[in-house]
Length: 636
Image (cartoon, rainbow, N blue to C red; front, side, top):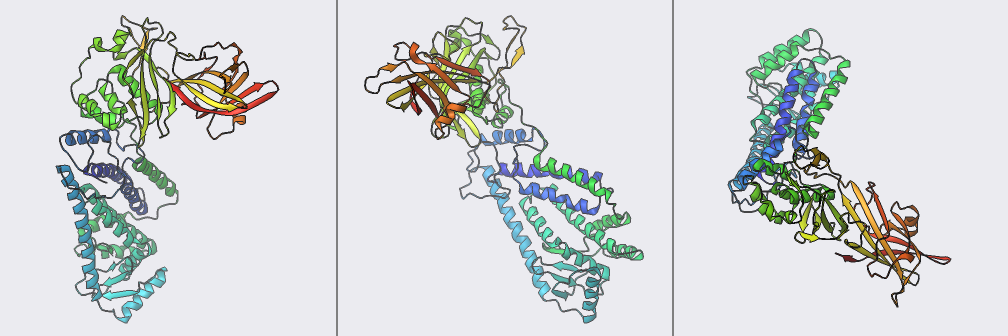
């Protein structure tokens, strides 16, 4: 946790899990054993030790949107040193991570106050333990008959006696102190064997360590009263479980006597320091334990399966989460909640990023731009999201000039990306094409050069140029030597091989009914963005030539081209690649930019970007030359 919003996300998530556990525990209070009642608190402990949102889901749908909206509303007016206002809250650790920077805003000071509270409470618990431990060191060794009784109880039930046992004046009830070197502390008065059995069972099952863990978790969420209440319940459940273990070892009248002993301790004071256990834990808690004893029974083995089933369901609900993904905002949504929904729907795929950006352009939607563009370019879009929605003036749009059809909320066009090429830094560059839907008499196509880059777990799209008009005659673009292509070059024997390669990718359209005056086959394109979508269709075009390196003369030789990885085997690629083109170059004319002579179209999306390399086979008489062609030139 690096800021107050991380802490709020963590403690709210834990609170939701705590409420769920309390409800279920209440429902099964008299149906499942004390072992189950105590054991399920481990789920809450694990939830506190896992960062909130670890699986990208919330325990309550929409709670993360509310938190992000509150953060945006508060931080937009501040200049916090610890918080980035428009970044999604991501908890990287369940403990406070202090950055030594000068606090600027009230949220910075609140986080430092929280961290200071954790430190102060830890120190307080440690000092209380050290004071008690020092007091215990002044205890005297008990009489021999007391030690013999203690050893007799331990031997009877197969338990171990701690190395040190002391009698301490002023102590009203026996307790164990210290998880590392436990000391059994006894009062000056005579102690019943059943009390000794209770404390020895605490030692056997490591309850002192559980108490230390609960103490640490209290400190981490010291300002959350619900979690303090839960840990009080957990410690009471620990004592109730120890009572259960004692009763399982007693018979008949001894069980009733054990209840009488508990009643006699209702007003006793008990050790509150961490790393201690005490059979006496307050009058109200003693009452609840007496009620548990009254319904004591040896729970049948058949209940074990039911207990495990309930525990598994609770574990999945509290740790994995039951809330679904945050709904993608609509193009015309504005305000803090729309901004929060946009931040929580950042594109997670290359196709999703391009789809979001392209529809942001077609809808002129700032909320979609917030989702797609890089951090340094989002300020203007964020400001627009904070303003009321207003219809744009269509006359100012390049799409209007090209006679594209408008149907709210967007220009009716399909987008595609041509020649999506790896940039060597984990991202891609390519050309976006906005093509009018079939049936409209538009005057051209709109293009834009873009870069798609990874950012943490998301993808962003940055414009490398403005919107431009492309007036090529073939609106379907591929295959077409008029559209952008990439030239791959290799050496096959004494020949230079050049391959012009095109790849067009786009997502599948979703259609909605449209009964207005303007219809396209009874519907229009649904422009809800798909930030996690994938490419739905691919179309490729290819043209190749074999040239003399000295004269540049082309030869009419059969060529076979296949897509491959840069480090792959070209012969194997030519044999097995699903993207394989066989061409006779004899029909090519003298145009320096050759017409594309082969194409592939389909929904097989193994290839989602331009290939790293091409395998080329050239048949020259009885000889076949195989080479690897690498990208040399990108023709815009």
